[in-house]
Amino acid sequence: MKQHFSIGETARLNNISIQTLRYYDRIGIFKPNYINPQTGYRYYHVKQFFYLDVIKYLKYIRTPLEEIRNIISCTPEHMQTFLAEQENVIEHEIEKLERARRLLQRRKNQLKEQLEICRKKEEGLIYFRHIEKQTILKVETTQVNPHDQPDLHVRKLSEVLEEKGDMVDNHYGCIYDLKSYKNSYDIYYTSIYTTIPKEEQINIVDKAISLDTISSGEYVCISFDWSTEYYNSYYQKLYRYIESNGIQTEGEVYEVSLPINYSSLREEQFLTELRVLTK
Image (cartoon, rainbow, N blue to C red):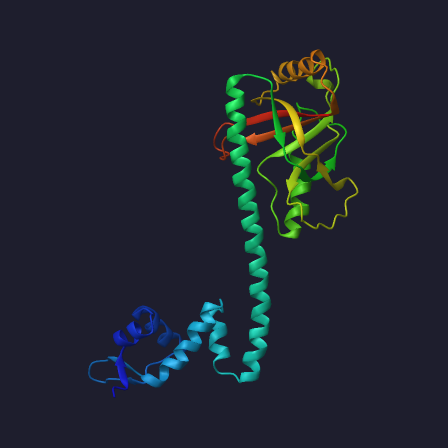
C-alpha cells in the first residue's frame, strides 16, 4: 500500500492547495516527511494526514496561524483550554453577525419604505398609510428647528448604539407638536430619534436619551425633497388638510428624512416625509 505522496497528491487528497502546503512548510506548522535531495520534491506520509486535519480544523474555527503553531505543540489539556476560549470568541462573532443580519434587514425594509414614499411624492398628494409600531432611541432637544443641523444630536444616539455593538440607521426622525406656525422658524423639535430593534436592550446613562415607542396606526402624510425654503409650504398643506377635514390626531408630527444619495462627494439630497398619527 502506498504510504508516501507528492505535494500535488497530498493537496488533492486533503482538499488543500499546493501553495498552502508550501506556506505551512515555510512557517513550520506542517512539514513534509521527506524531501528528495536531487529533485527537491516534497513527500508526505499518509500518517501525517491526521495532523493536517487538526490544522484544518483549527483554521476552520478561525484560529490564527501563529496560534495554531503554539497549540499543535501543546498537550490535550492546553487544547481543551484553548477550545473553550475559542468557543467564547465564536459566540461573540455569532452575536456580531446576528446584529449585522438584523441591521441589513432593517436597511432593506427602510429602502422598500423609501421607494414607496417616492411614489407617493411623485403623485404630489396628501396620503394615508399604515405604519407598524416602532421602538426608538431618542434624545430630547429644545432649540433645534428645520433650519438647523441635527447631526450632533444624531451622533449622541450613534454613540449609545455603537457602544452596544449596533449602528445608527441611515435615516433619522424628528418630533414636534402639530399646531399652527407662522413659519418653519417657529417649529422646534422636542426630540430627535432613530429606530432600533424592539428586542434591543440598551444601558443609557445620559438623562436626555431614552427608549420610547411610536404607535402603529393610520398616518396622514406628505412627502417632498428636503428644502428649508419650501418646508413650511408642505407643512401648511398638511396642517390645513387635517384641520379642514376634521381629522382627529395624536397631536405630534414625525418628520423622517431618508437619504437619496450616499456619497459626501455628491450634493446632499434627502426625501422627507411628515407623518401624523390619526385617532
